[in-house]
Length: 618
Ligand SMILES: [Zn+2]
Image (cartoon, rainbow, N blue to C red; front, side, top):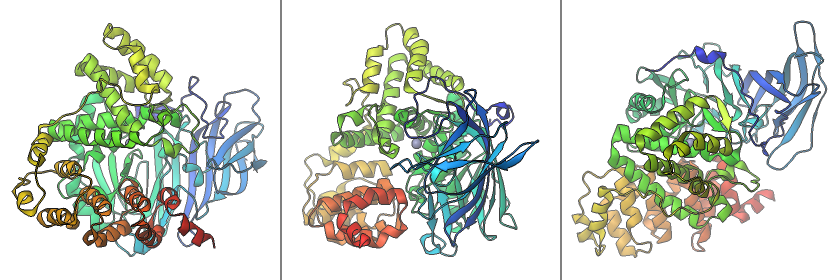
């Protein structure tokens, strides 16, 4: 059962005395802390601007504090006012010098007595946390679209606030948009479209700033089960309803594992294909890429992942980005458990094996300090902490703990852990002391703290890593062993029941260097260039670039012009940029596709093609 709100309304921000200071925020949240926010914003597509105000309440932690410091980036601050029962007026404020990735500190002089403070401001078109799409960049092609991506530190580009995960606040919002469009947020959403373009929202539980989210577009609504509804452009609605039909079951399985879902309903927003991520776990309303709509529910582990964040992350999150693994590692473990419960052990193991393969490949090119679960060296841009290490090494660490004490004990531990730290933001060291007390000590020597610390603070993967094996991949390996890759032999491989995961394993198990004849045979027999499944197409297109298989290049161009998900497109550009032969092809495609990509994707791809940015600067 899903429990509805109620108890949670009593909760407020939690003060975290043990957390490390967050190097990626200017906020003086240890002295004065925002406790509640009300946003009042108007959406202007013509100017690509959000205009309005953020009114907040605060709590003074250090007596005699004179000022509150907020994070901003590229915001135009107009004025700061205050209002209380007795008084109202203007407040002194200043924007401090801009710092590279962090933006500018907004320092506000506090009024004499506690009052509501309102910052009046508007955003700029280059706001890193907002993507403004023209009508042509949407699936429906008729109306513009706006969506936010606040994680890691992009909320400050569209809201003046204390932009650190260590601060949690409830929020409310009144948003005015063009009348024919719908607004949704990471909050309680209304099923009915408003007639005047004004929408009201309420997120009663305290959430960190990176989970504040908004989207505006020609969005349809469809309830697909008791607790799950979809928002999407009309053309994805039915396909998504089929693809994500198991979400209700996933919620039930997740609750059976780790306790009640504490956020009310769970809805999914399907975004236009330029969305830079697979998904974003905005509470109550996960943002989802359409690239997982495969027609056979074979990529819906991503839904399991975003749903799992309702516990690992949204309920218990990292206090600063050095501890991201507490969020993504736990979520990847939990995702696997939900996938296993809904789709069976084979599917879970196949995904685990593919993830381990990618993790090892990624770590092979990685500096040692980035291979530790906790990144202890200074990280300039917290977006750089988002690697397979936080996700998959974190997940395998938890699986390792599970194998040491058994599933029953480990599940009991996790259940208590989520409950104990509910609605808090914690550090790895807080986790370690809890782990020591509640799992390591009671295990009577089955788990050694020194081994745990190796996982967390050392590079590489421990020798006793639990390696996932699956019969399904062994069958494929056996068929490929010693096989001469020609049309006749390939036609004999039994692929009738293969799932996406088996196709991916098959493609990755092929030799890296293939002749034109071999690529042609593969394509003729399995029609890879025509693949509609975005993941399979991705691996095939990588092979096509590496082996200069030009018949697939038309598809490559189409793919890169229509998808913006970084995981799928960045490796393709990297591969082209690395090869002398395909550098100019990469530049040509990127030049045409760049305007459709999210800022975050551009940040990653721009440096691959320096000559293009020189042209733009001229
Ligand atoms: Zn995640």
